[in-house]
Amino acid sequence: MQHDGERLAARKGLSRRRFLTRIGVGAAGAATLGPTSLVGPAGAQTDTGASGAPSGADGTYTGSSRSFGRIFKDRPFAEDSPQLQAALHEIARPGGMLDAGDDLSKGPAALILDPELRTNNPDNPTHTAGTTFVGQFLDHDMTFDTTSALGRPTDPRTTRNARTPTLDLDSVYGGGPVVTRELYDSADGIKLKMETGGLFEDLPRGADNVAVIGDPRNDENLIVCGIHLAMMCFHNKVVDRLRVELPASTDAMDIFHMARREVTWHYHWLILHEFLPQFVGRAMVDDILARGRRFYTTRSPYIPVEFSGAAYRFGHSMVRPSYRANRGGGGAPAFFGMVFEPTQMGSLDPDDMSGRLRAARRFIGWETFFDFGDGEVRNNKLIDTKLSTPLFNLPAGTISRPPGAELGPTSLAERNLLRHITWGLPSGQQLAQRMGAPALAPADLDDLSGFGLGLERSTPLWFYILREAEVMAGGHHLGPVGGRIVGEVIIGLLQSDGESYLAREPGWRPTLPAAAGGGDFRMVDLLRMARVDPVGRLG
Image 1 (cartoon, rainbow, N blue to C red):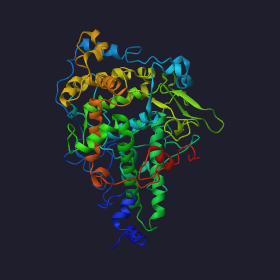
Image 2 (image 1 turned 60 degrees about the vertical axis):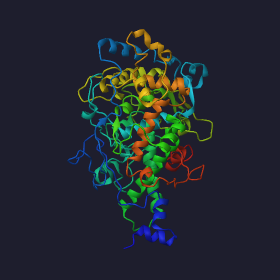
Image 3 (image 1 turned 90 degrees about the vertical axis):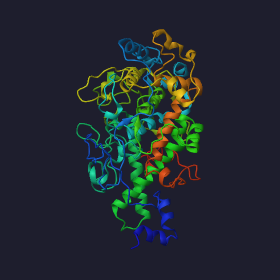
Image 4 (image 1 turned 45 degrees about the vertical axis):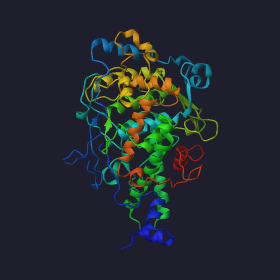
């Protein structure tokens, strides 16, 4: 029997393959979609098969390792000791060598607008401010460690990753409309549920302001919340588009699966063609695609601790001390705020970029974060060994930790360095040697020599990767060690995901409208289609 979509294709003179390709679904099967999340809105685990691989509602997602792992078997960069922990604390303390020393007393607007206040913490001319938060969104789509403790040696294989180790948007879709109905519009069934309540769209929230979404971390701050919302709006617009194109008799779940595939493949395109080149450099991306992965060679996706505990934390260096969330609206002025401001904890409408709240001004004007050609965009900070000052005093509500665990350090840098003890991570020098990559000289790290622990010769991987980017790439993107780890893992996750376009149809190109045309697609195109761009925003 001919499928409704095939009849439509026949009427338009298209083959089934061309029809499915045009809407972003490979001909190998529009009916085999729907990978499901292991984490619902409340963090509850769904069932897994006897092998430990997740089994979705339709039984199609097989996954693989649900724990973390390692790429390299090298020894830790140093033996744990009170002297080592004291040194890591000193390196990462507020006002220490990693603190950019932003003058927070000048206020959030001045830190953006006054060039003199940016000399100690320079902007990255090759990244816009939104790149940081796309990176955070990707992290939340790949990995969620809810159990390991800071500074306590842990075997990664015993630590469960509470996300699917693929870039499948399970943080947005949850288990799909059948499994996680609370994420979907009850009147429609296959559109993601959104609310307003502020000046513009917001995440659906309970009476306690807790967001009802697939990953609660995507409500950590206003900007990543906005990206999550944009992806929801994007999905809903794709559903609308398909309903116009397909016969009225097309099954709703078929439309959902087609929409999810189209959204996910365009998302993969953005990762591979826009954001990963910004992270690691275009030459590294091209090399991995052309010559293959050399170190992360798995065919079954998993998250290595060299990536999650060190290399992918490069994004912390890109965070600005403050942001302009929007240019105002409804008679309200522009909203400038620090990325974090602990004194604002408990406010129903704080003056920082906190998430988990709803108020009229708490929305994102994307012209600050991505380049729409109107001159309003701002840049990231360089990737280097300087972090913006607010990151050395994190509000307690932003710190993830196992249930019942102590809060621990509030310096993000110290937490990153203690992860090296948790995972027994090797030094940057060890991995440079293993990769055959040019290594930093001790002179490039001489600010670590005063601790008497040899850290300038055996450097914590995260610190090494930041300094490598600074010395070898001018802070514009990662260097050879950091770039190789991040590039191979992200490309490897896409290649080993049987539902990605790289695996199913490597020659696929975007099918949705794009300003540049020619089968390209950029983040500004996604925001325009989602109608959250400066001129198309939902009202």
